[in-house]
Length: 216
Ligand SMILES: [Zn+2]
Image (spheres, helix red, strand yellow):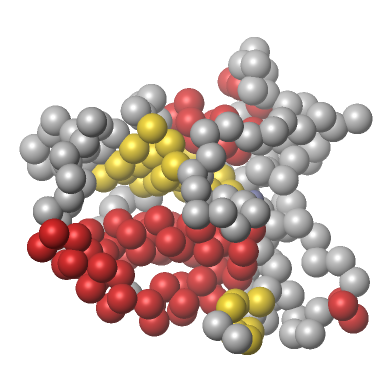
């Protein structure tokens, strides 16, 4: 069981989150401008490195090396080469330890844009309409990535800090092999928990399981 959050700290966090709204939207627009379809993830990965640096963390690149992953049950046969597509991770280490560790993970790859004439605004020129950001990958799942980054930043802004290690991982190939997540996972210490802020059907809930995928 976790102790209930101190009401003063809770309010400070909520205030910090509200103060970061503009920055969150700007960051999401920047990230959505990166056309990070399969094989073209570099601009988004570079953007993530900048975002992690902005959080005061030191990002590092984690390449996908098929020969090093081949015997892992999570490995999938590569579709294309991995040059220039290194995952980006960053780690926060608390000054005083003791807290449980958490990994915040998200994929930067997006599915193809589809037919151009079905977009009201271009897929990589994100636009805000009725309080939502429209652009390829804005929802799946760049908004989730920005959300966890802003959550971390809000804690710091509120004068608080995580009591345990926090890992952040921006990975490639969620929309196909999963090899990016596998490489990043193996490059980091095993955390106590992982949160993947992937969009779902809209319930205010955390999911503890996910359907699998079979490629045939
Ligand atoms: Zn997704």
